[in-house]
Length: 406
Image 1 (cartoon, helix red, strand yellow):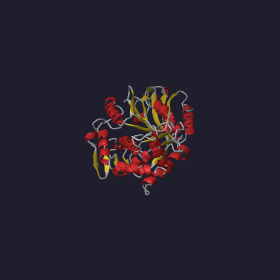
Image 2: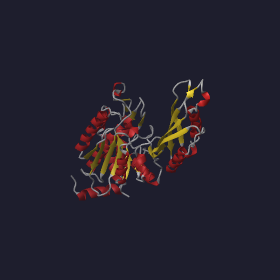
Image 3: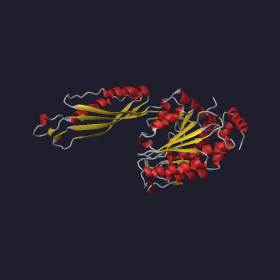
Image 4: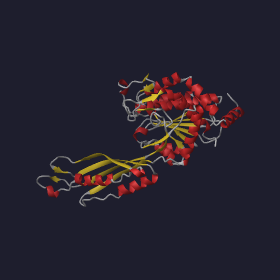
């Protein structure tokens, strides 16, 4: 193992080369370990881990805990009742700085038994299977980036690294959000190993904020044939409210409002006493979250004899394309070119949210979409490109190793 002076000298050399020597050394190691990485990926995929099955998710969590502990990480388990237990792993670094946070999740949208119809396989230049792309390959990349960095630096990471893997990201992150935010505040930068955007592998420099509202109408029931005029239809009132809500959409500002599920009434011959709509909301700017909240809370019944009940709100703030985000993106772009002059790292945004929304909203430098390159998240063709694994893992290692140079 290198002494502290040797590590400092190595770090200085990496800094002077802007990470080029570092990423190329890591790339060589990763290229020699592709079979091992695929073996590790298969192991994670075959631990089926739907968000709703705590026992199954905890089995995978225990496996991951053992793997990270074998790597020398200090593993902390956060017990959760409703979901799987969350996992934090701390790796010491030579420099006495705040840690770099590697953020992800190991719950999936796939139910137990999916492997029977979607088995893990490697063919046509891709790895296939439930959770391969979103986001178990990202976890494998974390592991191997850390291992390679430690080898390049003689057994000592240049900076402290903290891995934070949650188990409820696919269902809203209710049990993990506060911890994610606490850990982010103690971090120098956050790298989110969610999958990249599309087959071109773009990283995500902005994400829309996500919210949901339920608007419930309370009317008055009556027999539609005998006492029609004595009823107050909740369904008719809801129809007018939905038309009003749809007007909240403002595509130029990146605001979309989608009444997605409606329900109401009991029988065809009964004037409906109750009806409701569940609404999905997406916003690009934090200020627009407040605007949407004001609009929903300001809804008034058209029929004064009906009442409205409004619940919900924005549950993921937007990840805005800030200067802090762009600074990390520029660093990543430089490293990509040092890995391969033909490696052009693109940036994109998305209407979908991740836990990176929480960290970016706190003002912590965050770069998302650093995980697998592929397609088919939540779909039967979920897959990841094998050819992109080495250089994306080297890119992650380069970011970890140089993120705090400035």
